[in-house]
Amino acid sequence: MSIADLDDIDRSILAELQQDGRITNVELARRVGISAPPCLRRVRRLEEMGLIQGYHATLAPAMLGWSISFFVLVGLDSQKGAVLAEFEALVAEWPETRECHMIRGGEDFLLRLMARDAEHQNRLTRDLIEVAHVVRVQTFQVIRTSCERAGVPL
Amino acid sequence: MSIADLDDIDRSILAELQQDGRITNVELARRVGISAPPCLRRVRRLEEMGLIQGYHATLAPAMLGWSISFFVLVGLDSQKGAVLAEFEALVAEWPETRECHMIRGGEDFLLRLMARDAEHQNRLTRDLIEVAHVVRVQTFQVIRTSCERAGVPL
DNA sequence: AAGGGAACGAAATAATATTTCGTTTTCCCA
DNA sequence: TGGGAAAACGAAATATTATTTCGTTCCCTT
Image (cartoon, rainbow over all chains, first blue to last red; front, side):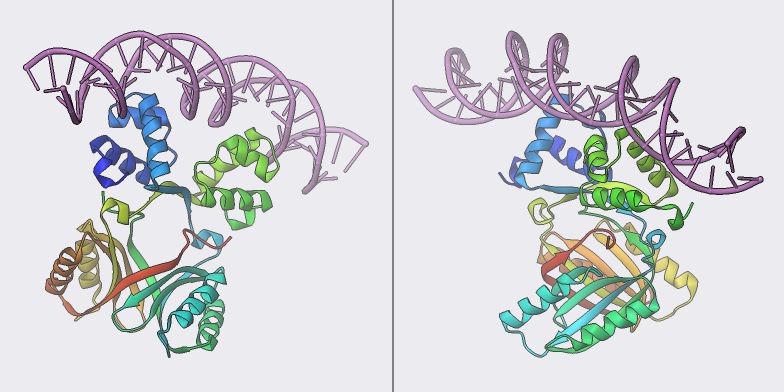
């Protein structure tokens, strides 16, 4: 039940499903060079092993009214576990929070948020500054994204 | 052909597919309260409109040997269009590059990279510094990710 | 109120997923 | 190195799902 149990066919399956999560099992089997039943068994096994965590449609943010994406470096006045966990729990409740990474290298957290417009973004930034223990906030507005690959290199 | 053409059922479909991209059309139709044929027609329409850009399996990076994720703030010595485009094209060729955002707010780019181990990460960071026009590099190593939501708020 | 376009849904058909089971391959271990 | 068990395979049968067809309904406009 580890990476060692993966052969080339498994890796091909993962690559194909990462590329197209709605490919049919028949087509997937054809591409990786085995018949449908064992292919499906492999997919189920990869899911059960937790290697495949789920399947998601990728939507177009701008077309849905979420035209602003921005990152925020956040510094807290304490690195105690309870303070960090409290911060994480609070920002995770905001629907605009897409990612919250605890980091090493200058500040404590790097967030990615989405906003419907500039006013919305301003409100989010102000709200963030008001959060308990937050002492520094540095915003990086995304102008354009030239590369956005889902998942892992395969 | 815009967001105005979306009704509540369309939004429900998008939310369901963002949550589970491999749900069957029958189940999707049941959840959004219509029968299968019109549901499928709506999905196809949303795909053609570009609102649904694709479907992807979400894999477990650590289990596949990609245990390190890190962000890098990159500053260049020029903001000329050709220089920016050249940088984007170069880092996009690296398989370890997952995201490359041009940003406003302190530096020029924010990258997200993945590495197999610390040595690999060091090599990537050194390579980045050697890239033409790069004058500043600040690395933020991801210690833990408490929130990672795909897509947009719905 | 009548006409027309768009969307719906039941039913039929096509395609795909999944199970079953006999065969082949792989991998230990004597 | 040979034998045997376990695992994986794939053809075929079955179950489920996707997709098309087509008659009906619902609006919306005039």
